[in-house]
Length: 608
Image 1 (tube, rainbow, N blue to C red):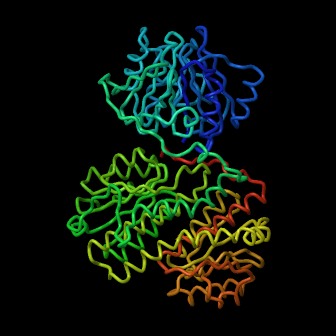
Image 2: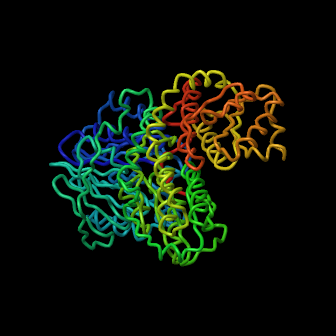
Image 3: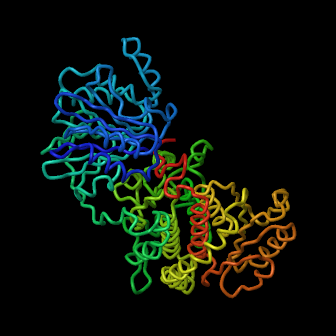
């Protein structure tokens, strides 16, 4: 959720920390701070608001030193404020801590510390860590942090420095992402790769329960109990420019325009000339699939909407019942899972807390697990039995676009591969769908050329207070994603409705001039959806319809129509969502919204 950066070396740490934190702004935050060690002093600067507030302070009054930790905070305990911002220090000011995650037993720990005379300044759970380090410290910082970890319950990534150990930076991970950047005469810690990519391509990916002692010329890896750990260096193979805007006004529109390439990158390595699918580290055999009597698809937010298409495809072509459910609800509904179940979890970051918890529950019950994620080395990718990577590249904007379309493609490939192995799909239909998938990148390029006309539509609705989306079948699933995209970046109240349910109450919300975005890309449901469009049009709604080229009947009941290239029904969401993404982007920019960093939202939700 938040962002951590740490540095030890010969350069000015504050410059590197601020630069690194700027690369983690996409994670969402409401305050920022750093702690710098120099000349036996610990200088802590932290402020509510954007990173620019911290940077302005440092420009006026630099913090000099070669060792430091930095943090961007998204509030979970205590309101956004200077005092609740990270880093947090102990009472004497010689220890500083940054933390991502939640310390679940912090109240119990806080009460014990207060009884021992410790005084707390903030409302955060993190401050207990600083005081615990202080309580256990007897000259050995590594030993003190090891003892602290034994007391902690919950999820955390920690960065700890101490003015009495100016040659060390301690990092610990449990259920919250953390990497170590390997430099020459300098080393780094961070929540994510973009924070260190300007300085190094070589990293260690920390696992749960691991600790790193990071020094200027050395990195010692161990379990939190002190057991040594050997780890391979992971070399990042994408360019630093991939995490920059590349000439676009915003990351969101850049990533929308990257979708043809992202889809092609996801498809091409998985398809050979004979239309055979190669699924990375997925080892499901025909025998395995025949033992599976139910499939769960678990995800959150946009990934959940992708999972709905996966449900439709697997249920149709693999001939097995599928339940798609939101990660935050799943575990509390007493799900029936056993060794005959397959759970597919979908997560852009591979760190989504609720999705990860569902994955772990499934594994405890003996189910087979399969992860669809964009991040190599993420927790979900490591803990699942099988992994399929969406080669979308880094996605910086909080509102997911290219991660979603590559998830759709990935789930399509998984469904078709399973069906082919089980022989539940005719060869002709299988080949037709594969050929249709190969054409998707080119068709996406055609849709991107509609940008100017979609922007004109955005001008017509950008002042609206309410906007509704309707559709049937998988058009309804895409309508939900389109509605989510609009509300999260423009702050307009938006709802997606099942078109066939309008007369069961929701049509009462339609007033004269109310914008309704109607999806009608399914040939088998086209006539019924057009009838629903006529119903809302008769109530005075302003209709913007989305259909396939050639289906001109829809124009008679619409004020505006967006046509996507013709495509087989089952794959239409990969195309139809893109005009909705573009529309949401232009509506938001016309309203002056901060498109890449919507208020109150974070890119990676690593706490429940």
